[in-house]
Image (cartoon, one colour):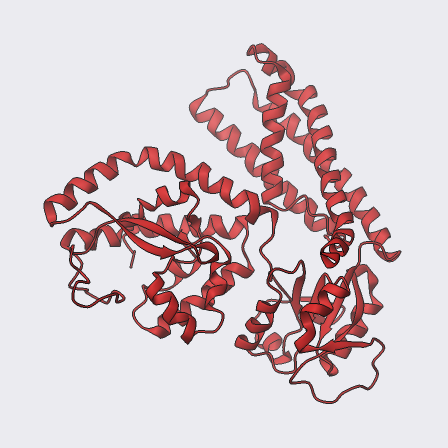
Length: 467
C-alpha cells in the first residue's frame, strides 16, 4: 500500500496536466463555438449549450483516444501540433463531405465550419505549446522526471545511465542499477548505486518508487525479455530496451535516438486510458449497430445451415477469457454436429473433413464469427484481441510455451493482429508464431492499431481470404 501511495505522488503531476489540457481545450472550444456555430444551432431551435456540449464531448473522446491529453513532460511540441492538425482536419473534411453528399445541414455553410476549425485548432495548439514549454522548464528543475532503474551492471547499462543523467530534459532520473543474473563482474565507473539483484526486482521497484525501467542486458533474448516483462505485470512502470548494436544497424527494430543512445519503448503495462475505457466504448459503438444491420445475414445464414446439415444453427463452446475466466463463445456451426465425438478436442486442419460444405464458405468470409458480437456486448470479448482458446488447449500450451497466459491480460477478440497475419493453428509451432503477434499487439495496444486491424479484417471478409 505504501508503494502504491508513493507512485500516486509520482504520477500526480502528469494527471494534473492531463486535466489542464482537457479544461483548456473545452474553454477554447466554447469560444470557437460561440463565434462560428452558435447562431446556426439557435436557428435550428436547439439550445446552444447542448450543441456545444455534444461537440466538445466528441472532441474530448477523440483526443483521449489519440493521446492528445498525455500528461508526460517529454511530449514533443512540434509532433503534437502536427498530430492535432491531422486529427481535427480529418474530422472537419469528413463532416463537410458528408454534409455536401447527404445535405442534411444546409444551414451550416462550409465557411462557418472552417471558421470554427481555424479558431479551435490554432487556439489549442498555441495553448498546448505554452503548457508543454512550461513542462520542459519544470523538467530542467527536476520536476516531472521519471524515477529510473537500469537493469544490467555492464558497459551497456553504464553508458545508458551516463547519457540519460547528462540530459535531464529527456525526463529520466537515474536512481541506480539492478545486478542481473547474467551480468559479468563490472563495477568500474559506477556513478549510481547497485540497488539489488534480479531476484528482488519487484521490491526494488516498489520501495524506490520506480516509474521507468531500462533493460540494458548483455544478452537480449526474446524469451528472457518476456520473462522479465512478466515480473513487471501489475506495477505502474514503463519499460524501454537498449537494443544490441547489430539489431540497430540491420534495421530489425525501430528505435529512437537519445543523444546517441538507441532506445526501444515497450508497452509493458496495459493500464492506459484507451484500454480501460476507450476500447470498450469503441466495441459497443461498432458492435451494437453492426449486430442490428446484420440481422438479415443471421437469419439467412441460419436457414442455410439448417438445410445443409443436421444440428443447431449456432453453437457455443467454452473458451478462456480475460484473467482466465471461462465463458461460452458463440459461432455459426461450420462443422458436423459430432465433429469431435471420436477424436476429442483437436485443432482444425487443411481441408478438414469435419467442415460442412456451407461451413467452408462461412469460414472463408468469416461469417461464422458474427454471433460473437453477442459476446462483445456482454463484455466477455472485444472486437480486437488474442483469439479465445479452449481450456483443454490452454492447459496444454501453458506447459509448452513460457508466458502463454500473458495473452489473458486483455479480453480475447473476434479478430486480432495474429488472426490477420497468420493462418489457423495446425501445430504447436503455429501457436508459437501467433503468440509473437499477440505479444506485439499487447505491447502496442492503441486506438490506431485497433482501427488498422478492423480495416484489414473487413478486407479479408469481402475478399474471401479468410482462413
